[in-house]
Length: 145
Image 1 (tube, helix red, strand yellow):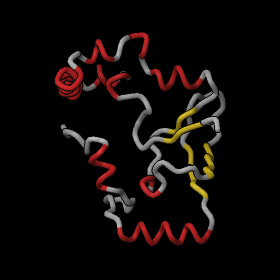
Image 2: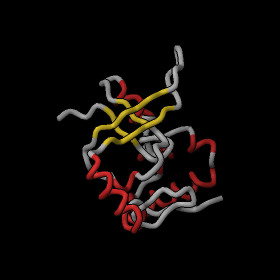
Image 3: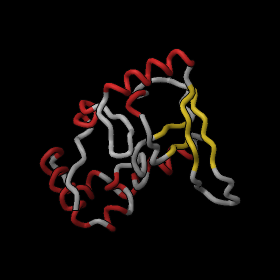
């Protein structure tokens, strides 16, 4: 099956250090650079070269694959699953992006199971559930400045 679009619970499917954030947040860029040198043996500039800049934006869009950014909610209930998803953007004439409501649709009986699972999971301050193992596997939240 062909992927048509992806949703991510962060500001971009690109690594933040492969976007303008690298320039806008020098403290975090320095931390990331040190991490990359320790883990991969090379600095950010060598890992994310100019020809790879914002590759998720540039390489996917021309193949008709879009990505929804900052998708919030109970994402950890649906990790690595195929579900029917509706994306309902605000009308934005001639724009390249828009605020949108994104809804995962499941059968009623599955919804009840998911809500029962959610009741047992930890929640963010906004009430969204998360799987601590998933968060840890992704590297936690990192440093906050």
